[in-house]
Length: 285
Ligand SMILES: [Zn+2]
Image 1 (tube, rainbow, N blue to C red):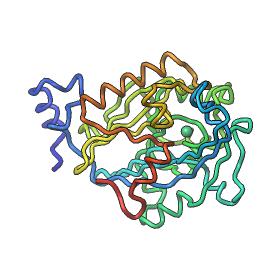
Image 2 (image 1 turned 90 degrees about the vertical axis):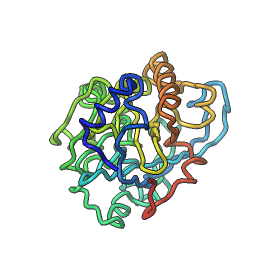
Image 3 (image 1 turned 180 degrees about the vertical axis):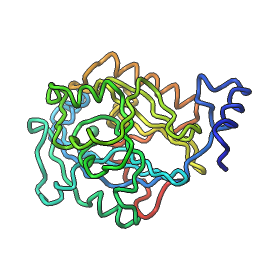
Image 4 (image 1 turned 120 degrees about the vertical axis):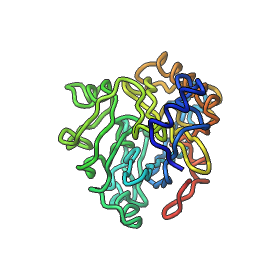
């Protein structure tokens, strides 16, 4: 059941929980469903770059997901994964100065086509951050309204994009998209069903996404706020993060939100967790 946003806000205000928990599961609206698309995979020969001092020299594989959310007549795409062009290179593409090899076995475009969704039908788009494994196909979605933290936008479109590990060729067309520059949390549809949560640290304007599903309840999509379950449990900060203190604060914030919302954390790059997700044409609800 979807109630008008004003009703949800009133109920939340009456319950006195809005400020701390975005309304909580008692009163908030939900999305219709969420597809978890395969948006490539990664392989590193030394995972300790993401877990300093731990698992030095140990190889690891990463999953990489995109999330397509149906809300009434709107489609929100969260992340666009590794560029579909990488699918033409079965041996993969080496990035990050040799630390990571990226692969695409199934293109984002083919999965959207399977669902009958044209890229021009995507009405809203947001990314956790502007690294290449998250904005790889951004240029395909020319109609979507982009929801981005101002700090991330300024870094991505400023003169020092490369310094942050960004590659403007992957997302340069977004300059022409309608864009909302955010300075913190943002209720995407105004009814509490999808909320962008500012989680800076991995990059200057990193963000995570709280999604309320009709049956499963609230989930939080991690972006790269954390990369693996073990790093979450031990609250480890990758060596190359933009700001270590911000990263720790963002993890604390998400930890308390998970409790307050009764939410589950879905960690994008955790291959073990991702392998249990429903895949197109199935969906989470
Ligand atoms: Zn990533």
